[in-house]
Image (cartoon, rainbow, N blue to C red; front, top):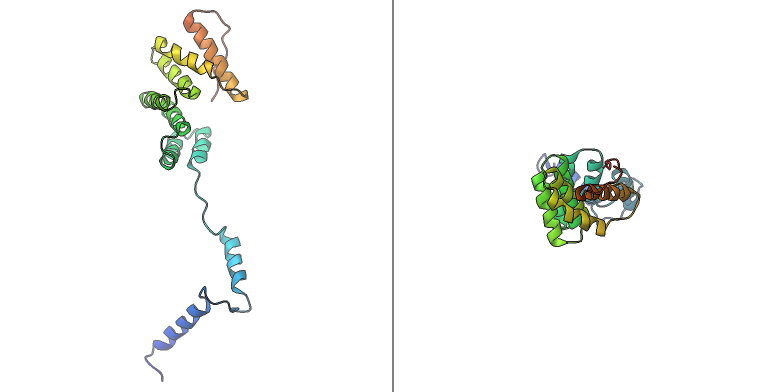
Length: 182
């Protein structure tokens, strides 16, 4: 009998560990090491886990109406990219949707400090001010939005709504468009 009773077990484990070590290129059970790794990569996915795109996750959650969850994702995206005005505007929209209009207004103002030409921040702040019964303060923001109005199919309804609202605030008559849908 060689050594203590448990030594055979330990010797067997050590031999198995050496057989599977990364430095070992010998076939094991007739299967080369590379093929074994390929099998596990296919089964479990790629080599490294893909990082989460918190911004895209936030957009999907926002679209699904999960505004609190979207806010969390956008905050994580902002942590990865501090001061990003696009992410900040998304955060402000989440605040608006969950009824935190003061936080939304503060966030829109922060965006405008960083980028005075941010059309989306002017639009959002204008309508928060309008809902807060401060129509006089909303006019310059509607004008700034329309001066830099985005183009595209999705933006068209917002641009028309801003034009109609501005005309109404100025006392000009204009056909009332439907409220743009988010």
